[in-house]
Image: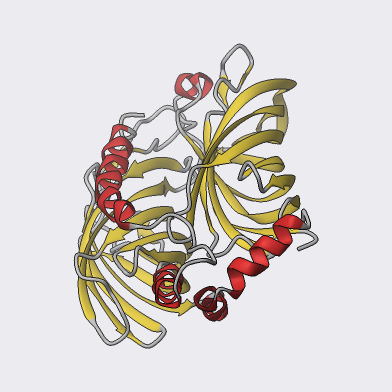
Length: 419
C-alpha cells in the first residue's frame, strides 16, 4: 500500500523524540541499602513517570470532501473515545482513539461516509504538562480511515497527520485543542461494479477533547521511599512468589497491511478494514530471567459488503510466545519476543445471497512480539501491558487472500496469580 512508507517516517520521528527522554530514565528501583533521601528521590521520579487517562474528543474537518459531478457535501465530523498515558514526567503522550459516532453526508441520492476508525499516536511536550499549566505540543499519528459512497465497498486509507496544539490542565482534568494536516486526499471509491470513481477527502481538521487522569500506583510511593517495598520484594523473591502464573485480557485490533490479489482483480472489492476483538492470554513469568511465556488466543474477523456481494475473512489464532524484558525505566518496561502461531484461516464470499467461495486451512507460522509494561514495582499483583504482534506469510487460495495484519493491543490487564 502506497501510504505505508509514511508509517516508517512517523515511527522514526517518534523514536528520535523519545530517545533523549529514555536516556534520562534511571533503571530499576533503589535498593534497600540506599539512604532515605535517595529512596525518596527514586520514589518521586518513579511514580511521577506515567499517568493513565480516559477521555473523549470531537474531530471536524476544516474543508469539505470533493466528489466529481456533485456539489461538495458537508464536512466530516466524528466523536471519539480516547485512552492513553502521559509518560516521561509529562513530556510524552501515547494514545489510541476509537470513533463511536460519525456524521454521514448525502451526495446526489447516495450517502458518503468518511470515518477515522482507529487512530494511534503520540504527542511531545517541550515543556512538561502538569496541573495548573497550559502547554504547547506537537504530534503525529497513524490514522486508519474508511470511505464509502452509496452501496460501494468501504475503502481503507492509511494517513499520518501532523498536529500542533495546546493542553490546559486543572487538577486531574485536561482540555486539548489542535489543528491537524494529513496528506493523501485521493481515495479510489467504485461507483458500481464496473465504474471507477475518486473521492477527495479533507486534509485539514480541528480537534477538541477532554481527558481525566488517574493514578493507581501512587499509594506505593511511601513504601518505596521508606525502603519497605525493597524489603517486601526481597521476601517474596526468597519465597519464590515473584515468579508465577499470568492471566491477561484486553481489547486489541488487527490492521491489514496490504490488499489481497483477489480483491485487486475484482475491481470493486477494496482492502479490508481493521478488526477489533478481545485477546485472552495465559502464561508464566520468571523473576530471575525477568521474562515470560504466554499463550494468546484471538478470533479476528473482518469483511466487507459491496453492490450485493459479501466477503469475510477470519483467523482463529493461538500463539505461544516468549519475551525478554529489556530494562526498567522508571516503571516503563519494554520487552521483545518471538513465538509460533497456530492459525485457522477461513475465507468466504457470497453474491446475491449465494455462497460462491469458501476455503479453510490450518497452518503454523512464526510471529514476533514487541511491547511494554507499566510496572512501577516488581511486587504488585497486576500491571498494564501494550503489545504489537505480527505473523508473516498468512494467506489462502495460493496467495489470493492475504491475512497480513499488524495486531495492536493498546491496553491489556495482566494479573500475577498468587502474589
